[in-house]
Structures are given as structure tokens and as C-alpha cells.
Amino acid sequence: MNHWDEKFDDAEYIYGKEANEWVKSVFDRRGHGKVAMLAEGEGRNAVYMANLGYDVTAYDYSRVGLDKTRRLAQEAGVAVGTSLVDITEPYALPRGEYDISINVFGHVPTDGKEEMIRNMVQTVKPGGDIVFELYSKRQIEFQTGGPKDIHMLYDVGDLKQELEKHGVKVLSLKEAIVRRNEGRMHQGKSAVIQGHIKKE
Image (cartoon, rainbow, N blue to C red; front, side, top):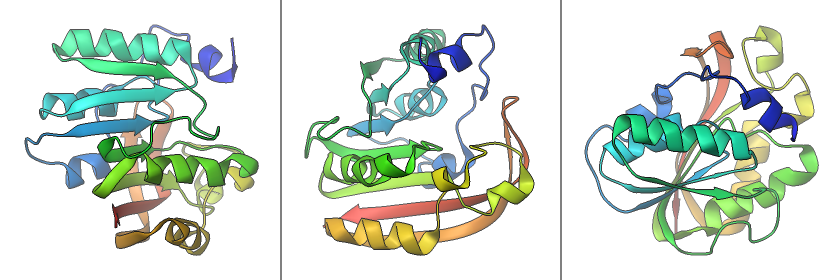
């Protein structure tokens, strides 16, 4: 078992079963199209998007997390595809296949960030949407969730610079102080970076 398998190996959904608030604010009505969920963990956001009518595939490095995703989808009466991958590997996701990619708190080591961002952008078709919420480096002050290693957190300027390498239009990219109540792992005041990007 890897670190994430061990973390998810619990009957409880440690990040809860409700979708992330930023995802719900961007996608707040029924829609259609193919959605790739990166680092989806236990499936809460994937199930939410499937409930809205999207064709969803959850990508994660944890077999246990994907098992829980399938159980949550079954409980909700929706279909969610799953794929066991390391999103920091080159070509971990198919290129140009999805209409939307979503990454909620998919934190990876420094040497994997560039490839994760490339996968997140390149898996969508031209005109597709990339939506994410990640902890900013200020989250170290709050200790209400996320990595304890500041190098796994993000800076808005660095993220913008990295995204712009991939031919995208930034619709929204901001750091915000929010409250997150997501299972027992994300509780309280949090420093996040919220992005909505369009692939050109």
C-alpha cells in the first residue's frame, strides 16, 4: 500500500462525501461532456459532477481511494469511471480527450508539479475548461488541512507562469481565505488558490 492507500483505508470518507465548494460554484447546473478528475481521492467531486449529468472519470494513485469512489457512485446511483495512475508521470492522462479537467487539493512533490499541470491542461480539448482549488503557501499558517511541507503548496505567480506555458486563457486565478468543512481532514479557515482556465 502506498501512503494514500493507507490514508484512505478507513470506512469513513476522511474528506467527506460532499463536493468542494469551489467546484460547486463553477458547476452549479446540469451539463454534459467528458470530465477528468485528477487526484480525485475518495470520489466526492466525481460523484457530484456525475449527478449533474457529466461523463466522469476519476484518476488517482490510490487503489483504495478509487474503490471508495466506486462505492460512493453506486450509493448515489451514478456511473463514474476510475483509472489508477500517477498524475505526475508524463502522459498519465490521454491528450485532448476531455471537455473539462478538475483538480481539488491534488498536492504533489515539487518535482511532480510541472507534469501534473501539463496533464491537467493537455487532457482537455481546445476550448475546454480547467478548474482547480489548491492550498497556497499561506496554508502553513492555518494548519487546517493539506501538506505540512510548504514545497508541496502553491504560489499564485508561479502557478500562473506554469499555466501560461500551455496556451491557456486565465478566466480566474486568485488566492482566497475561505472556510472548508470537508470531512475530518479539512476543517476551518484555509488559504487556497482557485483557478478557472480555458484551453485555447
